[in-house]
Length: 94
Image 1 (cartoon, rainbow, N blue to C red):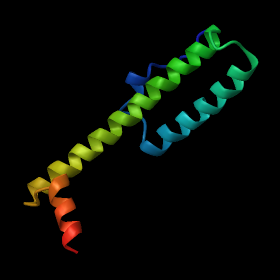
Image 2 (tube, helix red, strand yellow):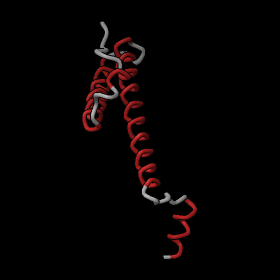
Image 3 (tube, rainbow, N blue to C red):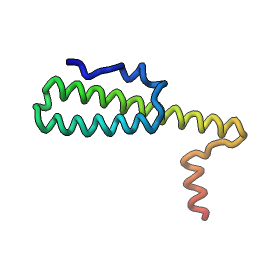
C-alpha cells in the first residue's frame, strides 16, 4: 500500500504556505500515532516519515525563496540589507 498520492515536488507550486503547514502538522500527528502502534522500522512508519520529510523540505525551500525575494526587493529599492556586524554595531550605539 502506497501512502503517496503525488510526490511533494509535483505539489510544490500548488501549495500555499498555510496549506503546507497544515499538511505537515497532520502528517506529524499521524506519524506519531502510527509509530506508537508499530515498530519504527515498519514500512508504513518509514513511508510516512519520508513523506513528512518531503513536505518539510518543501516548506524550507518556500521560506528560503521568500527570504531571497525580500532581500532582492529591498536591494531593488536602493535599500542595502544590513550585515550582522552593522546591526550589532547599531544596537550597541543605542
